[in-house]
Image 1 (tube, one colour):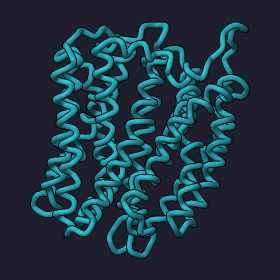
Image 2 (cartoon, rainbow, N blue to C red):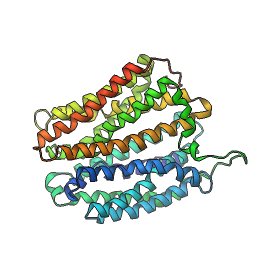
Image 3 (cartoon, rainbow, N blue to C red):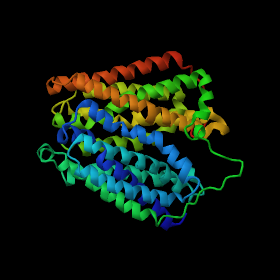
Image 4 (cartoon, rainbow, N blue to C red):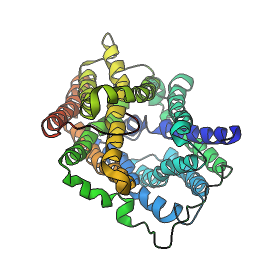
Length: 411
């Protein structure tokens, strides 16, 4: 790979995740403070991510993989996304905001796979080259959070009251427009030619071909656990930033980037844990981290116990990597060559689609249920619910998942 191509791919990844981090982290606070949305209304907005994840395989499988260059589809989707971001920036009511965010998620979620496709097609050794390209995505997300908190201060209590938090959509829209235009200058990535008798079905794109793996008891337990653990995950996505903002933690968006730094660090440590503890214990560590994180959120505060909140944020790396990345590795090992792609699609559909769709609804219901309580008691009750759900998943996994050796290149 030449230096020029490496720079282009790195810049693409940087913008891809800068755009997402520029508005998604603060979305819950914007909806509750600026648009005065209820818990269920906020849940409906966040659930657009799940609908985007469900629809994305159709866009990739039926259009991008067959008829058009991946970089051109990537550019077009981001230009459309820039327009939708501008409409979200101008929205003053949830009912006006919702159709635009739904449209945006439908066009954005496929770009995650497209960005990966463009990258992989330029690499001769993806196992060694991809991580150094993908890390710029994490850097982009982190920089977006730091910019919001420490450069523009859009998330500070005084500025937030002025409604300037909506500027995050403008920043994301500009980033989306830049990436949309830049994408047309990326290396050409034409559709892969298939044999005449090789056709991708809808069931294959959604991962339904891999449903037969559920006959394996361990994989079934893991599959159910993956759906259930996404309920606590949805609480974090929709409530973490509003929580940190309302209790008065300074620069909450910037501090939440600690989670992405942690994610990058523990991704490097994952092979060690796999080799030392095996799959079951590694994934259990991840699930227990979910329980601990929400207990810390429930009893921490922005004063002398603020360190509990920082630790809770930092646990994101263990929560995400040790469960979801470990799960992807486990799925790859269990599927075999024939069902590798379908199995990953099935897990993605189960987690980002079904699991988080349920999770956002539960989070919205719980938030509305405790509405009216004073701030400290309200958040204490809200965070204990996902802590309890995560603990239940831990018990299910301990009891029903039988330890087994997972063979994978990473181990």
